[in-house]
Amino acid sequence: LLSGGSGDVPRGSPRPPKVLLSPPPCSAPAPFLLVLVPSAAPHLQRRLAVRDTWGGPWPGEPSGAPPARTVFVLGTPREPQTQRELLAESRQHGDILQGDFQDSYANLTRKTQLLLRWARACCAAAPFLLKADDDVFVNVPAVATYLATWRDAPARLYLGRVHWRVAPNRDPRSRHHVPRELYPMSRYPPYCSGTAYVLSRQAAGAVLAAGARVPLALPEDVWVGVAAGRAGVAV
Image (cartoon, rainbow, N blue to C red; front, top):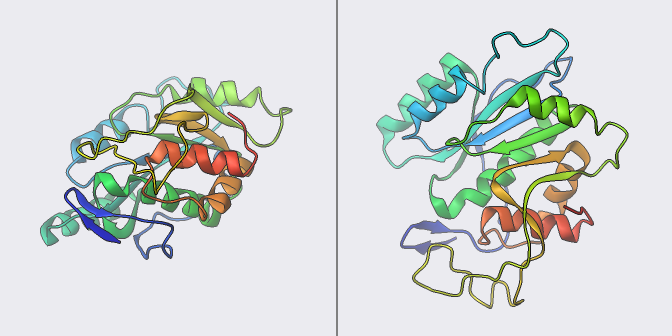
């Protein structure tokens, strides 16, 4: 890791971080849709809002609706008191996945790598994975019902709002800066916006494997898109 102004800046793909907090593994029957929400320690009110709204049970949800499960993914806060509060939150709700790396914007990609690893190890039977930010609203029953129509589609699905022919940001003053030595090409491959995207179980595994050869310092959604492209997973 190289020290940067906005926190630790990952370069390359270091060894997987230690898991500090983990929810219970998925039990049978596995959820149809595993919802993984990157968050930050100070965003308690956002997590509470997600639990109370779209990330929890939906009122009037039909009994036959595809089941979903929500897990929040965090790094390590700077303050010990904040870590103690996270531990209490984890004990209360049982939905916190925390990695042993600094919780910073620069480490968003490490959160995604962590959530993909956890999904493979602890919820491998879930057919679909939805990654969504903690400041969005997702109609989970509608998404799950839509995904149920893809059962006979190709196994490797990568769905979301697609960005095409985006040029890397070469401004060193920007937090989105990507130097040429990190990514020399003039355009990124097509990738889904990091606000929210869906990966099938097979696509998620392929992205995780290919991502080991993709620099973690790329923007999170770009990292997923580059890894997907190397794995032959099309948007």
